[in-house]
Length: 199
Image (cartoon, rainbow, N blue to C red; front, side, top):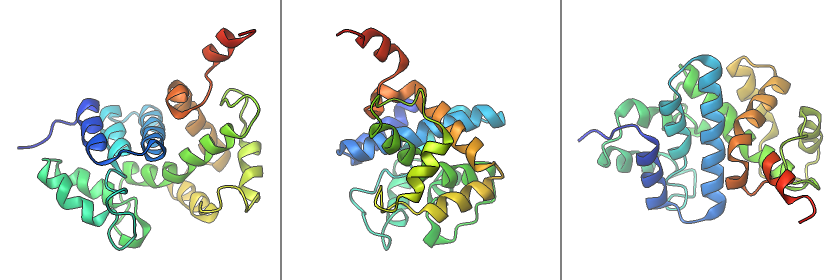
């Protein structure tokens, strides 16, 4: 039976296989960025968000490149996830050489690492907020090799280039996408900061 592509079903699938808060937050951040780009490009926000939410659903059970995400594909099929979405999920892995021949696939690759990197930059700032975060601050942290050292800086730049979006504009788009879910990512939102004054 084919799974209906809804946020609820994506969340059920994700939380069936993921327990760790860090990976949950990563998937939420990628979902938020994908939804933002769907709005920008006039695409299906539910579909784009769904793919972003589940793209790393198997990472806890398959944490190595010889398994992730390819070993997760049969699980997705067992759950009734349509084959085109399975292919979209597989496309975010560079080592699989799955063609990124759609705007969605290019976007997923472009927001995957950057979404969590932007959150990490915001978390080390005094306000722990995205509200005053600018591309120059993100770029500065990219030059700091000791910060989030596992992140492939060149890969982030290359993926944005393939998407065809200026990198500073890309950073701003991701920040805009993340703002509505800031509290879920461990960040303060504007409302939180205002309510928290003097508290």
